[in-house]
Image (cartoon, rainbow, N blue to C red; front, side, top):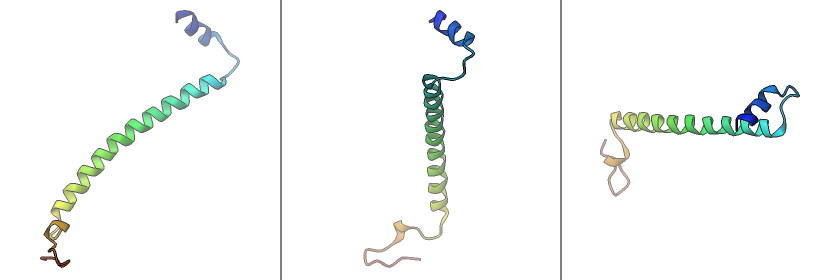
Length: 68
């Protein structure tokens, strides 16, 4: 592993396809983690906003009307 890292550091030919693949995989991984965290935040915020509404879907009657 140490020889591989030293060989990569000493290589000045530019990026190759595997190196682009590693970078892309890292970027996708970071994006998935970020979106996962944001999804939880958005869900919590929207649920809180829904609870603050004066009339939500849980107050609707079986006949299709609302109790507002």
